Amino acid sequence: MSYVASGFDKKKKPEKSLTIGKTSKSGRMGTGKISIRHRGGGHKRKYRIIDFRCKKLEIPARVVSVEKDPNRSGFIALLSFKDGEKRYVLAWEEAKSGQEVIFSEKAEIKTGNRTNLRRIPVGTEVFNVEMMPGKGGQIVRSAGSAAIVMANENGFTQLQMPSTEVRIFPDSCMATIGRVSNTEHNTITIGKAGRKRWMGRRPQVRGKVMNPVDHPHGGGEGNQPIGLKYPKTPWGKPAKGIKTRKKTKPSNKFIIRRRKKKRKK
Figure 1 (cartoon, rainbow, N blue to C red):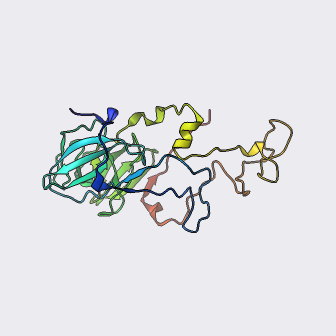
Figure 2 (figure 1 turned 45 degrees about the vertical axis):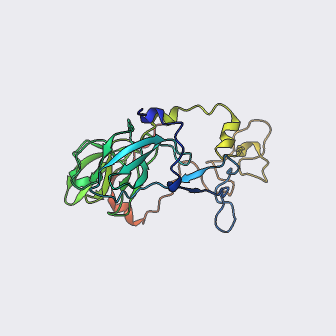
Figure 3 (figure 1 turned 90 degrees about the vertical axis):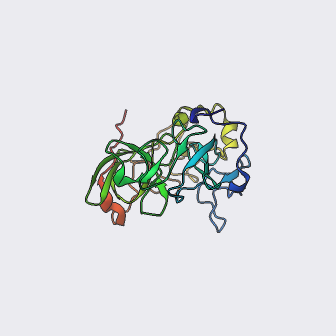
């Protein structure tokens, strides 16, 4: 029986050789200091080793199953290569068991195959894109996301990112054709606070309901405005809408057009 990505195989246990134990760090750095607040608890998980580099070139592979990965929003596909090796990769939309795919510089342009950007026609959707040749896919990896090939010229390929930003990549970089699976991920209703706790998210409290000693927005009688020109973090730094990207970042030269700002309702 085949399973499409919209209905993954619920009975399939993860491939034992491709899973390792995962210890919860509760949002802490190596020194033990909290770097991300409101994290902790959650259900015990196993980490699935995902092959983002996809370096088994010229060897056909067959999709064994499409599975849910608790560590990411999109589904994952278990591939069995012709030489007998198995690997997990990000599943594409409408992936199903029994489907044949290949990673090659001469691969056919069809969903699930992976090839160089220079060979992919304009207007095609791609995901799991490399930023530097041979480094492995680093961007466009979350559920339902895809970049669109805009142009190929002078050794570079222009991609329109899911954020509408247009960026150039060396055309020797590899990308998988298609869109990441689980496109309905953003329509999921959590339903209750306990489900968030299963996901490892602890409760968050608004700054305006705190005391002034605890947050810049705190204080006042009842539900009052924050009383500031702009919102601040608990440590007094500007928040919401402040640009955090460094102006001198070396990769700025690869950005052709910045992402469009969302209109305020």
